[in-house]
Length: 93
Image 1 (cartoon, rainbow, N blue to C red):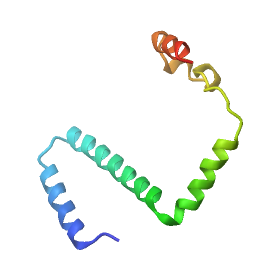
Image 2: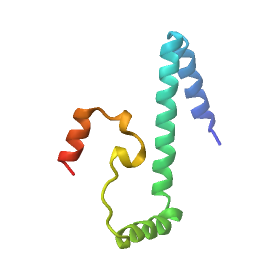
Image 3: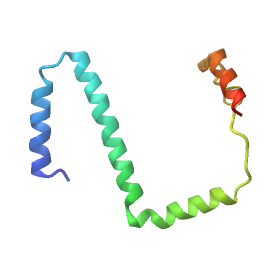
Image 4: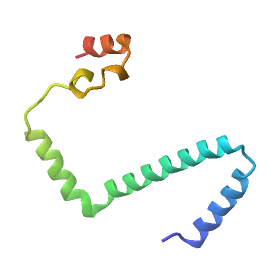
């Protein structure tokens, strides 16, 4: 539930953003969406109700067999990585 204070601040932000070009407004909307997604994620991670589940996931990861990091060729992403980047990835493997 959005508080009245937050609603007022968001209204002021959107009024101010109205001065931007449509492209800048789109970019700003993406930035706000990302910030909101990150805030929700951070809130969920800090929620004590989720702590037991997160601890169990961490323990499960520690017990799992260690596997090598997949290469772009393993995931079908060869075309998404330049030859220079691929060489760097393979050098650091």
